[in-house]
Image (cartoon, rainbow, N blue to C red):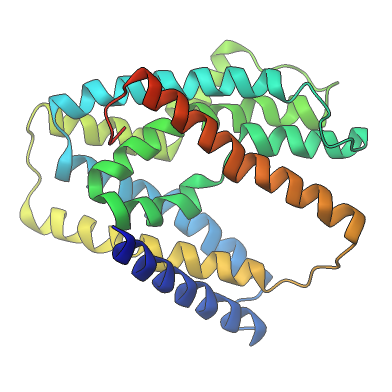
Length: 253
């Protein structure tokens, strides 16, 4: 596993380096970056998820997905309460960004290629089931956090937005086909599989191009950003891992 992880991280680094170089040479400008972002998130990612479902989904996977979804919902409730505390002693404007950053992850874009490399198609399915509550919150909580005076979303609006989300639709249709053992024609599966393989390089090249943007560093602000990153990327995952180990959740989940 360690060798696989090292190799995977090396590949990820190269993809990001490609994106960085393309941006610095202006081959990826602002317009191209916006197109690439929408193309990956609204087309390639849903195809990748759909392909993972029809490749690896079983009734046992469905049971595990229910656990994953319940875990994700509980985490969001806990994090919502956690974000009420201003642990990093930041301004009112900054706390909004921190609250949103803790509640909503960009794991779909960056995490999916890593999970796919380590755990294959099943890992991709679990990951995107786990991200469903976050995707709902991205829509529901976003405006509420940054604009408290905005009109609150009705349940109907939330449901419509959720069921029309391309990633959620891909997940649902993929699960339905897998559960009922409905087979697609070979040429369709080949086309879907071909697009799905583009997920890792395209998403990571996009991330690399974003990292090429000029950033002005300010020590007092950087310390807060580092603090947020340590909480988001290390503290929360470790606490969650320990809790799930103690409960005895199936290792893959």
